[in-house]
Amino acid sequence: GAVVSQHPSRVICKSGTSVKIECRSLDFQATTMFWYRQFPKQSLMLMATSNEGSKATYEQGVEKDKFLINHASLTLSTLTVTSAHPEDSSFYICSAKDRGQEKLFFGSGTQLSVL
Amino acid sequence: SQQGEEDPQALSIQEGENATMNCSYKTSINNLQWYRQNSGRGLVHLILIRSNEREKHSGRLRVTLDTSKKSSSLLITASRAADTASYFCATVRWDYKLSFGAGTTVTVRA
Image 1 (tube, each protein chain N blue to C red):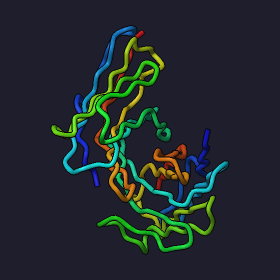
Image 2 (cartoon, chains in turn blue, green):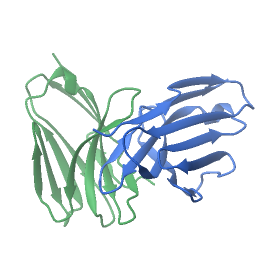
Image 3 (cartoon, chains in turn green, blue):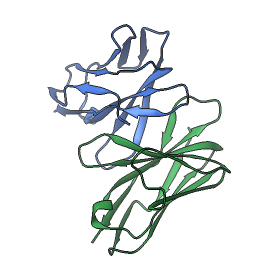
Image 4 (cartoon, chains in turn orange, blue):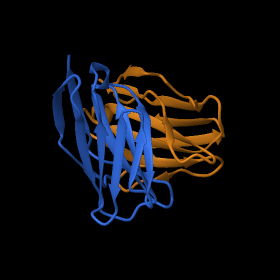
């Protein structure tokens, strides 16, 4: 089955630093990737939709300068949390859509802790 | 944005029993999907039901969809300890944006 690899699985950083999270589709071409944020015991909140070769579409309330998304190829999308602060601490999950399929394939998530 | 609402929020059952959880949504959908999440992990797709379908089965899973009531249910039969996880419904719009419900945490006691 389709596999989405997300790295790193866990990152701890100091306040003010930037963190990059990678999401790769390993055996299919992902024309669209989605980035979600999840707080403990809560649902996934869509942050942005990333289409290969075009600018990401951000959901209302999500700062595009804070959460930089790049989808440079059909197999890779990155989320960079710039100048991270403790309130950015969260679980970030990516998902990818394979052309012709209706279900999404999810990465295993990244737990970000900002000190 | 979060569209679906699920109930119950949490469910604790004995191994072998059935687990039923419900999902309600507000807008029209293309399809509805159920996902499972183990603690601290990504989501795994379980089953998809289209807006013109009423019921679907996959192994021990049974999903129903009532578009007139804008609701869906997921039934897990003969539960096992390994079914312990959080279950989310996700409604899918025409532009393929998924909106997740709040989730139901299922604990299966051995």
